Length: 121
Image (cartoon, rainbow, N blue to C red; front, side, top):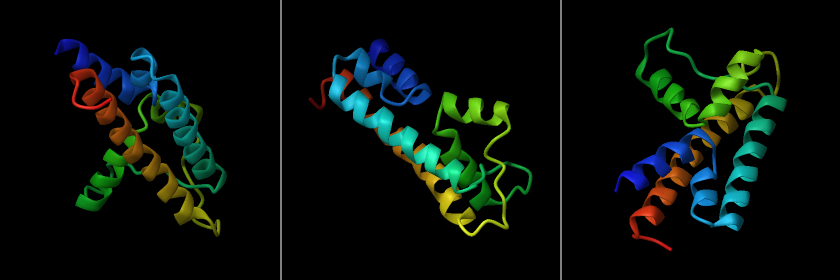
């Protein structure tokens, strides 16, 4: 069971990594490339990551969604991207893509966890 929780954490940190560790290469490639594509499109559309400054429940949910991007969330923050530009026509779409990528990664990590527990194939 400890292995399953380790796979859950690794899969959250790097999308698809839990599937790679379990020899599910095709799934891992699809999940990793899909989530990276969503992140890239969100950044190109000048979306922003949610923060915790205005402590509002919807902002907290947005922040938790963004945090689902794992290590990429921290890398993008360190580089200085993900600040968004409200003047951009695609700002809201980009922000939605960034949150959606994180939420999708949570589902991918849970799928890897279920495979490690023997609940799925």
